[in-house]
Amino acid sequence: MPTLVETVLFYAGFLGSIAPMEIPFDCTQCGRCCHDLRLTLSVEEARAWATNGHQVDLLAEGWAWTDYANEADPAIAWRKATTFSAMVGDVPFRINLRLVARYEGPCPHLLPDMRCGNYEARPRICRIYPLESRPFEAMTPEKRRCPPEAWGKGLPVLERNGEPAETEPRAILSQHRQTMVDDVPRKAQLAAALGFTEAALAGEGLATCEASPTTLLAALEIADQSRTAPRPNWSIVTNRETTRAMLADLDCPARLVATGYGFLSAFADER
Image 1 (spheres, rainbow, N blue to C red):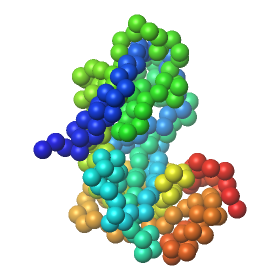
Image 2 (cartoon, rainbow, N blue to C red):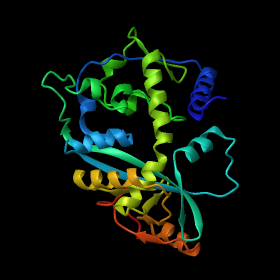
Image 3 (spheres, helix red, strand yellow):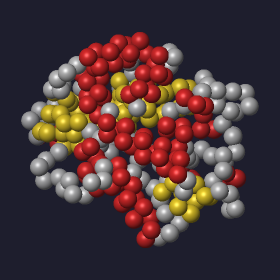
Image 4 (cartoon, helix red, strand yellow):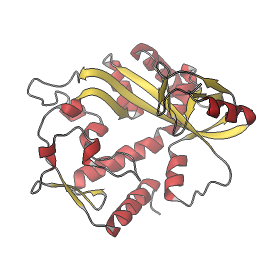
């Protein structure tokens, strides 16, 4: 029986085959993707990044989740597999928690000639760039930092029909997505160890926890030793008064905040 990741890759290829398309690409070693980092990491990649003294943020968003969710839909099944359950008041939610390496300026591993000084141990998200790490999301050159000449005709094919054209990046992408599923319980434990129990409403932004590298590593040790699933009560943060009022009507705890520390918004602040 195929795994969820295999099913996701199958559907991505099936959808791509409806409108065959090839995207040519060749890295120019411009180094743009190695500046001002926001890298989605696995738990172990986050541990390695923090061990080197670098910042890893936790970003959280949540979906209200009912028994009516169509889990036969591969996109819904994927969302469930990469989130953990939580209660916001009396309402069941699914929380998506991301571990993101944040670094301003050039990556600390970037060499003067724009080569990677950590090439053999670099995170998977670096290994697959500029491919899209999320299933059901199209990879578009316009959303990548690579210069126009990296996408010219006659270059090697990066993606064909929505899938990596080469075997190695396809395998790394599959590993990255499988780890997103496998890490969910440890992420829930990590959030509990840090006392991080706020999420943005999905589509509105991301609640953030900016623990220091030392604090994160200590919390990871606690999470690794935990044997029971955490059951903290979560709440929602939003910068939109209409959302706060709607959640209040549902007896969901919600806090109105401004965009900035602790909250990355997709919309302008609304009071």
